[in-house]
Amino acid sequence: MKTRLDSNSWLLTRPAAHRGLHGNGVAENSLKAFSLAVEGNYPIELDLQLTADDKIVVVHDENLKRLADTDKDVRDMPYNEIVKLKLSDGQHIPLFDEVLELVAGKVPLLIELKQQKLEGLESTAISRLSQYNGEFVIQSFDPRMMMKVKKLAPEIIRGQLGCGNPEGQSALNTHIIKNLSLNFLVKPDFINYDLGSFPIKKHVSNGLPVIGWTVRSAADKAIAERYCDSYVFERY
View 1 (cartoon, rainbow, N blue to C red):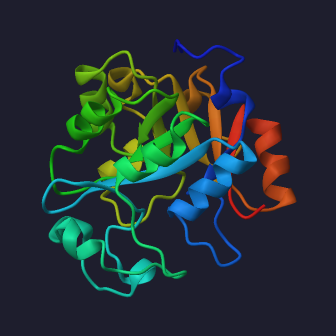
View 2 (cartoon, rainbow, N blue to C red):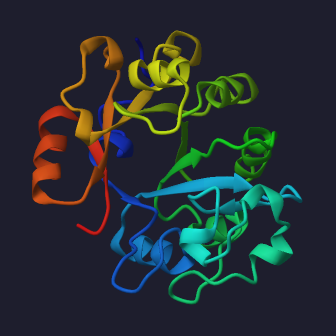
């Protein structure tokens, strides 16, 4: 497969901070974590979801029990309720707009669109990013979402996330996520695959640049440096 990424692209030469530089009392996907990544000049990996009132928030989990001790799903809550919740360090769950204002093009963004039952995240995110003056790429585990990105904004560099042992998926979805078997439709510029599954078979990468997630130790870094063009790291 062909890629539009140059070998000198930031995505292939600069490891990205997974959900910002969190840890040591700093919550993941928080404004503080992103601020620290900007200070360290690290590209930022982050996650997007839609609220019940179609606001884009930066948060990983669909259910907020782990992150904010509230047993509700993001999609079922309006933002005026979500903003009142506190992350582990007392910060709030930020709007995408807040993050873009903070980063302001200082470092690139590796943006993941999370799978949701709500529709419209792709178009809403693309609309907001059309006004953003900074480098970014978009990725997702869901090839349908990436096909929509391709249709709505084919100029955006896009990536397909994969995993050797996806949890909670049907047999069909497991096969697709493991083998990236819809890449012929997505036509991604890169793949981002979990380090625990390396080495991966040639048909999975199919000649595309490979990012690895997530480096948390020297052993992980050794795997990433052996098999990947670059990687996403966390607390390391």
